Length: 231
Ligand SMILES: [Mg+2]
Image (cartoon, rainbow, N blue to C red; front, top):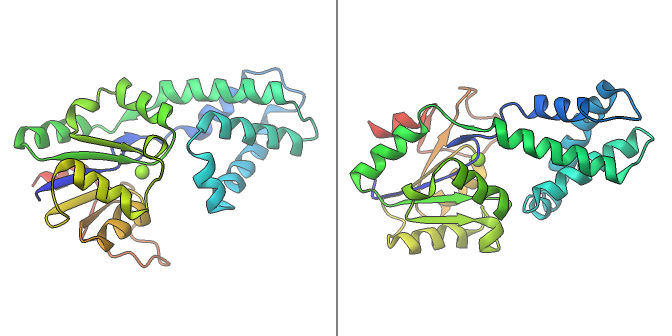
């Protein structure tokens, strides 16, 4: 390994953990025109529709997460028959604050990054999403000092799986694709797309669920913890 590209959300940072609880608390803390449990259930359906129904919408909306969350709550309130944009904005803001408080690095993340730094390995953080949210996570968890390059979709103008994202990361590290590895939890963005450019693709499968039956991805390695890459 001559260089490593690393994903942020659900790779270094436990991003998805506690999402349902944060939504339930944000709804429970508001004065609602509908039963909180009803809104929470409708929100779950609406989130699924919003994020999985249309890849173009996913790409468009993920660079402004507070805006996306506000639209999701507004749609859920409309589905409950009580549209209220101000209430939607308040619930989305409360959710954002709760998420920010709840997010943690995975237990091994800091020791992993310290070990790679000690080896002098060129490191790039390559993350999709909202520039403000991603910068805030990097700052809050003191991650910038580990990386020679940080590429955020919302800053760079395009995101994974576009080839120029990985090429730009390699360019900033001053390395070619040979000997460069990428690790992340997303099979298309963090494994398949970098492999097409000649990188070694490592999939982190924290739950040990194994490759989904329908995937065409063949990671060079599958790990359950980042520590496995240090051996
Ligand atoms: Mg990820």
